[in-house]
Image (cartoon, rainbow, N blue to C red; front, side, top):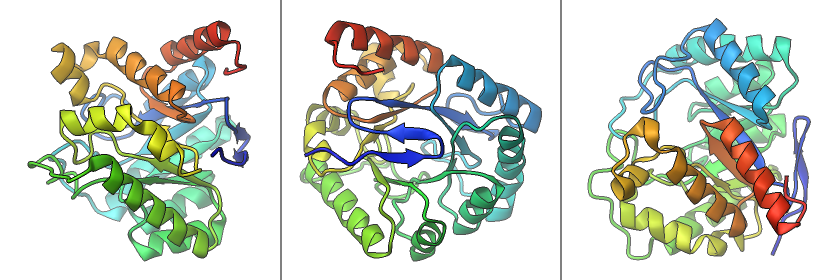
Length: 279
């Protein structure tokens, strides 16, 4: 079962045309690029660079969700992300996603010009669902077992794909009842999953795609790639591209990435080989 096309800002999400979501962490402690873009000028410059390289959406986050990360306040998060969103919106019309679990931050980001909410807690906070409904915004519902501080402490599942699919389906249903229609699902690669769990999600990704919603995959530089290859964080591009292209072939509709230019090139080659019109 496919999904009906819909808009995220100026971008159009439709089957067969994957979108690239460029990661912009305005944090001091993210696992891959913490501290690189944590002032407004650096954040703006990187956002514009990713746009030039072919990003369809910029995902702005102000709270690290790496394993073991400590939570921060909504005020601290807003002080990081709102100036960045303001600056990007003044210079570009590229769609902006706000990566947050805090309703107040989501609301402020939408008021500042963001176009989508990406919630790693899967809209389990009813206030976040209310914000999405009020602003009629697209959303990303992600699965995470536990919290960033605890999620990698021996996560267990009886059937990881079944449990993740069930959670995503339930949350999407609740959001739709609340008035939100433009819904993207993210199985949460690396969020409360072992290497084996992550590999099972990739192998059975078609089961999540069959739920009928667009699916976003974010495997960029994740630790399971390091476990499989021995590569440090900065050398995981090859593994990232492999995981992401496999995801597209299994039906994923969005890729959340650090390396935009390389992913745009990979999708262009895939389109040329497949002749399917994917670009």
